[in-house]
Image (cartoon, rainbow, N blue to C red):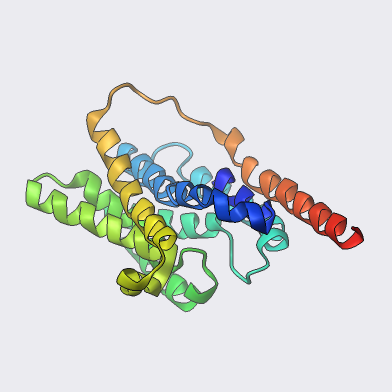
Length: 230
């Protein structure tokens, strides 16, 4: 994610030679969604800190919006809002209680209403729930179908309707779509292999999102000021 965002700070003549940074960055969002899906799937319905998980994401979504808008200025809500909405729907899909179903439907309606301002759109909101289904898939044919759906949603979340123009897109755009589609499949494969247990990242990573946006936006402003005065 940071590699992807750093690309926007680079001078135009360097950006053309560093397109791999954009491709590499397309792995981030699907893997964030997979982390949410794995956390939901591994924990019981009423585990301690369940609300803390959602509230933590929402808190830093709110704290990150100003740095995000300052850096990108695209009129969108930052990625953490999408992850929070996706978490609620994933909980409903996995635990299937009436209360969670009602919450999931409410969140889905909200996501549909506000999809123009959501980073990664409605497909991004639905991706954690699709990954829950992929994690639970048993039979081979169901697993192939669910994994393919995850790849498709990840690609649509990253590039939107332009995926329909795939044959006519430049090579770099095709690489971006391929990376986005590959990310959930790669992550699911690693979870299936389970080479070694992974240590939890911890809550310390939450502040990294707004902090890195503030640093990059400051660099961008400083670079623009230097060019203007040159």
